[in-house]
Length: 209
Image (cartoon, rainbow, N blue to C red; front, side, top):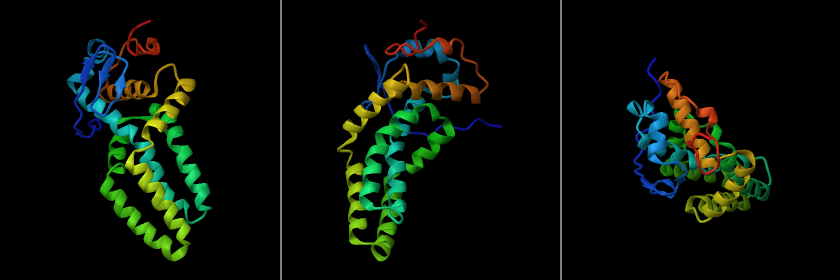
């Protein structure tokens, strides 16, 4: 069976002294040479550009999941409780989702992240909410959508998520995601990456200790 393909996202990158940096500001604490020495065989099938794009898309999934669930929860719970849960859930998801990344989930995440579909979804649900609940439910749901879609609080969520992740992993969450995606992608192609169990010193992701 043909391995699941990563989505063709447009993400370039630069190799800096601190590691690989994407245009979106994601910094992976690993150099191109280290990646090639460890996963060069995989890159014959899946480019590093595609893998970095996959991680970049995965970084937006926490916000997307919260946005998709918020209108539904408004039907059953107090709108202020839903709003509080939404704001707490984003950094928590940023911390716990990195080890779950794999190519099929990345593809699904890409569609969950589509702003146009999210907008149509909210128009439909807010219309129903306005008829079945109060104006408060509609305004709170709309406020959550505007706040999260505007990305104004992304830096705060990133800091909190990274802080939680530092208590869960030896690596930064974004490095955990890249490492996991490389390993899972290699497994789909039947490629065994040697020495990955030795990788894990924070700040030197793919350097053998």
